[in-house]
Image (cartoon, rainbow, N blue to C red; front, side):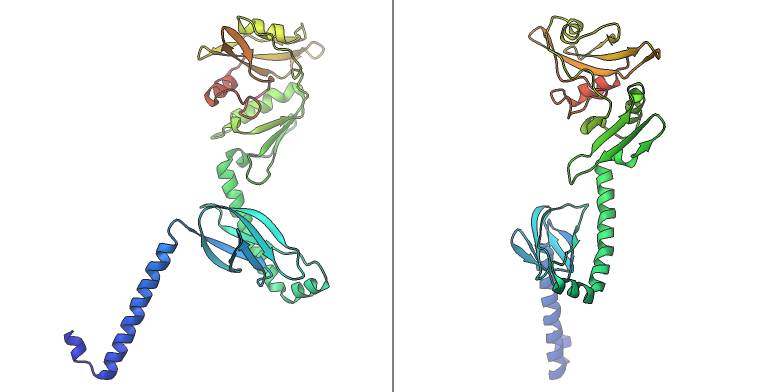
Length: 304
């Protein structure tokens, strides 16, 4: 207060104006900070930059950064002479982009795109950044992708990824090399193979069976599947008392070799042993959904 008294009228006016500006700035900062609690900064960029963008029907600015709560949104991007885009976008702490390029639908749109070419070039760069970030996030979520594809003279292991679902793993191998491919997946560090859908190119010879529950798991398997000197049953192993795993396999007498082992998992219910699913070289939550995760782990670790 003593300082203000020593100021002349002009200086006091300047002092109060500056104080008011600082106070407004502080209030604005506080309001903005509060409004952004729980929200994430998102890069929004669609070419052309004049395109209208709405999320769940609410307009947001294009070619800028907006703050949004994590979650799924229905995005709609519109601009005259360009094809309207409607897509679901998911905002997470690890993926912070709503980006893309619109497609011209007529000569007016093509002319506009040519005259604003720099906007499209800039957006292509941002899309590249988004794809790199998306790829990194996907590999963190599904660590098996850090190792794939795997190709050698015995087998190949690749994947198909669609949107936000777990990737499908594709194993291409002749029956005599399928065990080696499965063992490779089981040996991958920090990979839980049970979360994936796994497709095998080799024909599964055990898809057709008629379950005939018996008092012992071995008898249930023998009564349910057609076994012979060629198609055999390995010795099995009990898991936690109420589960049992064994393998069905084919012995090729002409080549004197054992073809792939297919794990068959059973559970004891009302003093009878029941087959939980079609036997598979590798059991997962997709192909054997009735089994708990820890049981699948022990079943896959079983070696006949």
